[in-house]
Image (cartoon, rainbow over all chains, first blue to last red; front, side, top):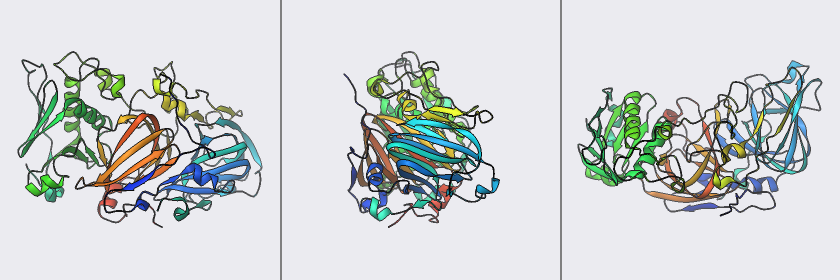
Length: 166
Length: 338
C-alpha cells in the first residue's frame, strides 16, 4: 500500500479545531494554524503562535529578502513551506549584538560590516541553527513559511485574538 | 504506607529495592514487588495490587505505558497508564498511585499512593520490562509493526527495552552533539514515511567558521524514527526545547501536565482526548492537522490518537522548578489570554 504524508502550505491546508466536552473554553488551547497565520501576515512579520513564559515559536511569511537580524542567544528556523537561503555575517562591530540579558532578535539597519561566515540553503523540513551573535538574513525566492524558535523580543507580534479559535 | 490524595505532600520516600519472585511455574514470568505494590502478569493481563484494591490491564497496553515511563525517566508530571494507575514525577522522588486521580476511587477511599526514590523505582520497572517483554514484541513500536506481547514467556527483547532516546545538548549535527539519522547508523526510513524527501540542507561554512553553522532535515530525521510516542530533543534555545516525535496508533498513556506544553502538528493528523488532570473528567477533543498549533494547559491530561504515522513537534520549557510554580498557582495554567 502506498502512503502519502500530508504536509500543509499557505495555499493548501486543512484546519482541525477544539470541541469542548467539559466546563472550559476553546480559547484555553490557543489553537491556530501556522499557514493561515502566515497567509494573513505581511512578509517578515514575526507572529507568536506559541508562547511558554519568555520562550516563543513565531511564524514568518517569507518572501524576497528579509532585513538583517542579530540575537544574543541561539535561535532556530524551521522551513515549513518553500525554499530559502540563510546568510551569516560575523559583525566587525561587536556592539551590534544586543547585551546577553536581552531576549529575542534585533533588526539591523542594513547589511552589517564583518566577516562572511557562510550560508545555508534549505527546503521544506530543514531546521537551521541561527547561532548566537551571528547576523543573519533570510532570502526566499518563493513564498515560504518559517517557524522561528526564539524568545519574546522587540520583533515579536502577539495577536492571539486574531489567530486563535475562540 | 497508604495515602489518600489529600495526604500526598506528606509521604515518606521509600528507598528499599524491589523484590522479584522466581519465574511462575506455568507462564514463566516473575512477580515484582516494590513498597506495597505487587505486579504480576499472565498470558493476557497485568495485575497490579496495592493494600486497597486490585487493578487489571491488558498486558500489551500496560507494557506500552511502562516502557515510556521508563524511557522518559518518569517524564514531566503525571504518567497515567489508564484512568486508575500511574506515576507522578516529583523530580527528587516519584509517586506510584492507584486511583488517586480518579474521582470515584477518591470518593470511595480506595485510592492509594506511595512515594519512591527514583532510582529504586526505575530499577523495578526496568527489571519488570526486561522480564515481561517477549522476543518479537517491541512495546515502542506501533501495533502493526510488532508481534504480540501476549502468551507465556517466550524469550526476550532487551534491545527494544533498552532503547535510548536521542537528546541533543544544543543542536543535532553540531560537532560533538547527536548525529543525524541515516541508514549507516541504523535508522532506515519508516514504511509510513517512504515518500518523505531525504535531501539534506546545503551548509556552506567559510574557512574559520566550520562547525559554527549547522542545519539538518528534521522531516528526514523523523521519518527515520524507529519508535512512536517517544520524543527526542533536537534543539535547545536557553530553556526552550524542540522535542519532535513520530506518532502512530494511540499514545499509551494519558500524560498529565505539570507545566504548559505545546503541540505543533507538522504532518498528517492527531486527535487528542483531553480530561481533567485530577478527576479524569472529559474536557475536550482537539483535532490537529498539518500546520495546526495548540497548547496543552498545565491542568489537564491528554491522550493522542494518530491514524497514520505523523510528525509532531512537542515544545517544552525546561526551566527547573516550573512544576512548583504551576502547582502553587504562581503561574496560570494557560500561557496567554485574550
